[in-house]
Length: 105
Length: 502
Image (cartoon, rainbow over all chains, first blue to last red; front, side, top):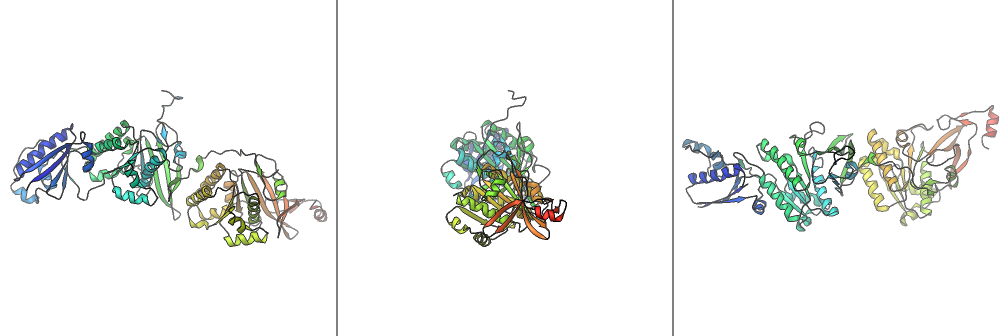
């Protein structure tokens, strides 16, 4: 199964740059299957932002597999990102073998 | 630049909302953001929707509608009831919705973010339809959709700044919890806007009373205080009450009362744009006065509208018939329109709106309200005064010669609240009084005011028979007729009786 993400960013902002780095890091380390990340700059491509109804940036949307899930922010909290995108079901299960890693904060 | 020591305020653009230009002296500041705050159900969304609808329809200014609470489809459906086809406006690229309503599954938040997505959507919408107007309804919902209030505050500020740079005339609505007190729930208005409008919906005397107040419009004057408004089939209608400038009677044209003697007493008849108050106790002949006035209009081919609050249509027709006047015929001919209603049927604002709508549709030259004191019974003191002022200024503006009757509480006459409120506004006052002379009740009539003209200052006797109204000679040797208790003067009773009529 392949995952597809759309990450909407505001090209210039620090939070957006962090989000790109953090998302890549999180999926690389936590997904065993293939994935695809499409980064959209809302400033350059407002039509795509309008189409997706993006209010906050950065916003990442998991498009595939359904259902769509969204997480907002610079994605600095790995647990929240995994849960929010539905990549992990139970938090308690994950807590048992938590691997500490440094994320770009 | 200097304008008499004041900073030049931005130009205002009309909203098209009925009465709003009057209370703001021109509308909302162009290219600026105005906050419209109110409790839930106070009419904020309607205000926003009408601002866009009128702006697009009447002034050809395309607009953007950002919804933070409801889905655009809900808004479209709701305004459809008022007859505004938003779907059509969207299809014609005059209106663009941005759906920022909460999602069924709230998004997780982690770390910093901003609202650049919304901002880029606004810019995109503006460029694609050439928008001039924008509405955000209601901004407070952002604080529920997003958890970081600090970020939201900062971003609202950034967005309003950007709106200004884009030259959009914007309305941002915000929720408040109480009708009086803190202006908006999140205190955003202080830094968001120089222009704040408050909508209220207060329960008063068992009736809902909606009001609008212009709290501030930067660098400009506007009318203070709360103005009542209604939301009806045609949208919002603000009743600008006291803002209407009191124009002195400008018409020199005289029209007949319908009775030669009465015209004589008023030095040649009534002025075309005047307001006449006929005051008297019950049974003193007020309705006959109205009938006479109506008949005169119809005979001259002038349209006349009659608002009857005390008698039914059948009663009115029968009374007129008794005096040889065929109201039915005139109604069929389109000269007369009789509206019979209980004053209790609706609030004063709705009555006023109904009267305005009827006048707009029927375009009468004369208006009769029998009686205005019936309204006084059912509305609170202050609202009654507002009603009277609004009504009189409206009919004056339309140059409709209007006759209002007022029923005095006591048989002998005396003041009523109605008179206290209305007497300064009216151009002519006719008093009808009972006069008891030697155990017999007679009727007296006096013109106590006739603006811009001389008038007969005597109290005359008048009689009513099957032909209608007859004015007689002045009472002599009787004083205090007007004040209530007539007393005989003069040396002897026999002389008095002999001289009573010249």
